[in-house]
Image 1 (cartoon, rainbow, N blue to C red):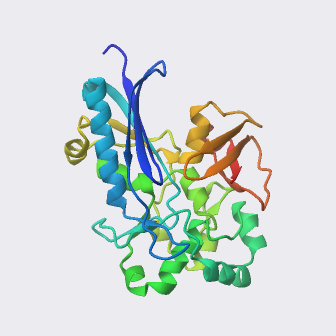
Image 2: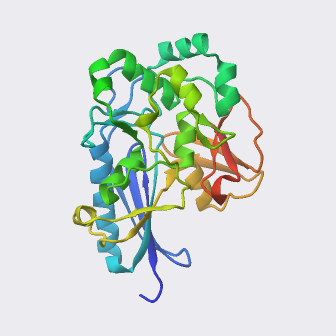
Image 3: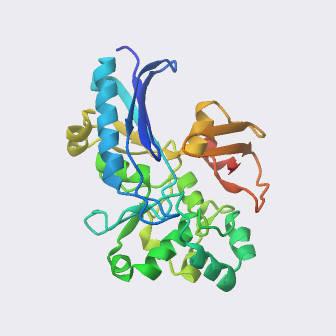
Length: 302
């Protein structure tokens, strides 16, 4: 082809969707692969990362087959994903230790009570722009620390849903600002960086996360030979950092300007608004937008 095409994939709660588009935005092919969520107890929700990885590989192969596109014509790959809560705990060989405790899991009630008592909601809000609730990743991480000490001792790093797939494609562990912000109490929304002060107070090791937080458009690596065998993508294809599904969906409908409002409907529904400046509220979730290199934020409820 004269102009490159681009591959986009969203790793959702109950399914993974891929699409190929040309440089004008025309959709060339789509695919969807379904899967389930593990519900070990009422109010709990977990997923093994290989469920996401296998669905990603299957969905990519399907759009390549349907479109007839030569993988050499794909100019870049981007992945968005569900908020994976605790993230995937992996060991030093990057093998999953346990399933990720995903966004819809509500088990970390006592951990939230401890945070409110020992650190305080106002302090968390002042630094992060977010509050204390079982939705966020940081109480879920503390749940693992409290209830699964053997697993905790084995954790080398915590990886997002899309970050796990990016690692399998490129060999690079990355995280973008929207994902870091969505963890909640360990990301400084004002400095756009990890809040090491709160990490220390919470007892969450800084080493669990990548040193650098990427902008969503950053090229973080290229498809390796192993990634090529897994998906059918050409070795050397650029892969960008990607981001959380909600702000990525806002970007897809060009919600880029102050006051732009979007709704994302899937397993859940959230209404999000783009802001040029921080207008923080304890009633909404706030994180960096995936566009314009951290100049804007995405705030949502739902």
